[in-house]
Length: 472
Image 1 (cartoon, rainbow, N blue to C red):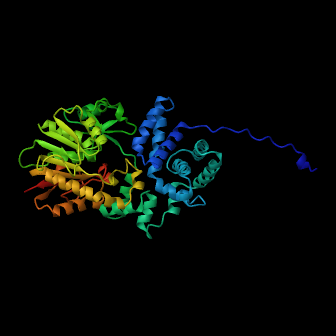
Image 2 (tube, rainbow, N blue to C red):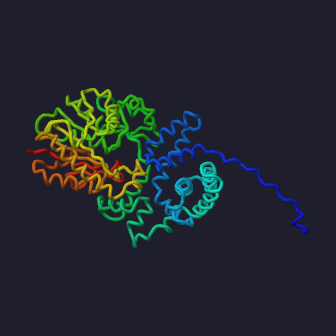
Image 3 (cartoon, rainbow, N blue to C red):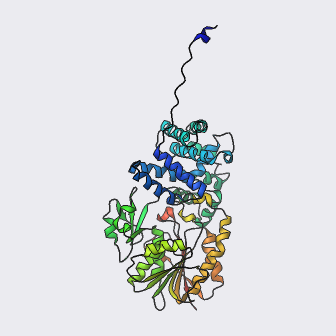
């Protein structure tokens, strides 16, 4: 018997049960909901965080980290997919989605945060042991150790096609947008490389929380007394909360006298409300009112002038959200569940009409980063008939001399100017109004008469607005 065979074997290490990290486990739960149920992170994450706080597992720092992990991973998903693909020996489509979620969370910690490399890898492997099992945790460990060999700039240089050879493919990987979205945004924006890079980078930044003080119910002075509150940039009713500001902690928000509303959305409502009219100004319509942000601001503005607002929303549950947003308005209003393309009201009934039409949402990718991965070019064909139908009905609903505002949270030309142009070609009884003077102080609004806002220029969602007067 050899000397080596006579040596006593080392005892096997005792099995260590994986330890559940509440922050990373919650982030994984949110990503699975987004992936499996097509949920939106901004709807899934808050109740998860609230439940964790109620159970005593979370403090404010834990909630901030979980939020960063979820949104950061979703925003950079395209880039991380390219990096992970370079580190595995099979196509990504053959990697189980839960495994890919853990890998993406790990990649974001390694490449998109200041979490130390060892901590990012070990925490991700521990999460994999909890949610995937020890076998697949070894695969996660091996892949993330490869990812950790370079930083984000180094990886994008390796995995992104050269800009000179394929500019759109390069920008798609570097800035984590589908190529077709890069192309569409670039067409809408125009200009050279610098502008589109700034826009795509802005889509990957965490948006500020902006509040609206609903006229007659709250004031900006009241909201500015909150910690870390600063005035809005453009809207007289806007107040911005610094990073970490919690809208639910603001008394006026809890009471419905103020709300969370992007400044671009506020500007659209204000421009319609202030557009010059010929004749009376008594009846207003929001024809696509859900979930109620613009309707609440319009109702408050209408009440201040002795006018009334009818808020119409096709989906009954969304009409309920509108009713909740308008509850307590100082003046009269009405909320109905109705199809805006087949409305129950008579033609020519209103002085002012807003239609903020359903769209791809490409102007709000900062707030809903997962939307960029769900939308497809063919979605434009699905929305096109509805958008045109809603604008035609809005023009029928306004009286001669009244004004229609066509708005959409997408800068895609197929959802903005193409819709307006196509409909107005068939409506000689209309004319476009220059919307730019109705957004006083807002720079870089283009040649008009319509208006396109941009995240990287105005700090708002990419809202589009065309104002149309019924002339005959």
